[in-house]
Length: 273
Image (cartoon, rainbow, N blue to C red; front, side, top):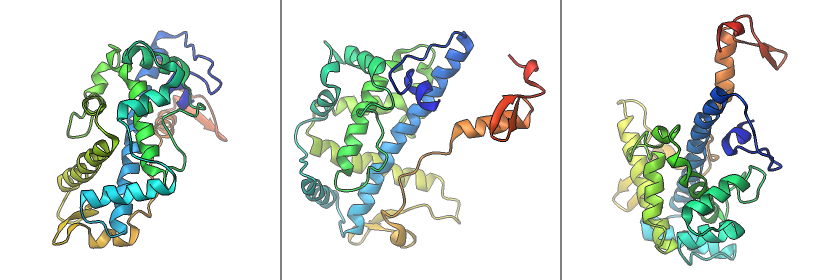
């Protein structure tokens, strides 16, 4: 259900057609929430890559890049070409006369069961940075035309640069689409991983909880003492399931009733449209 609401298609490519206008508006809003999930998932993968490099003794961005060039070479992959070339290769036959046309074709074609979909179930390993770059490219094609939809356009600006909002992130990728992949990867590690992690962790510091996992030390970039045991050991996180949360809330106020796992209209269902 979540995948169908996000892509507007079922996993066999059949379009999802909602007759109720209010429900379609809700679907579009839900799709924005899922888009943030997929964006965050790819960035969390690059955080894992960064921690993996630190765990293997890297202390500078250049050392982190060299580490991933070596790991990628093990998987017979090279950081050559540009992000635009990678995105074009991923689009393949969907490439149109311009980027919006390609994005429109992507949204009409690439469903959740498509190999090009912006998700990898187990992205860690020697191919990790390429999984991340590929997910960025797929997400870029998905979001490019969606940001112009008047219903959801306000959601794209939420968060801005501080929280890497969707409009900001699309602009960030677009400004770097013609740069070599190695340069883009360095920007990802410096801006989306290191700087963002430091900014968010410090903003949430309450004098008690330590959320920093790495910092600048005497030897360069170093893991914090509290993070050393779990560095690059944690799974790529997926945010708590909003659908489960929503249905639980609706059950609490009797709009839905959960009967042995089956959801049905509750006693108060008739009071809401």
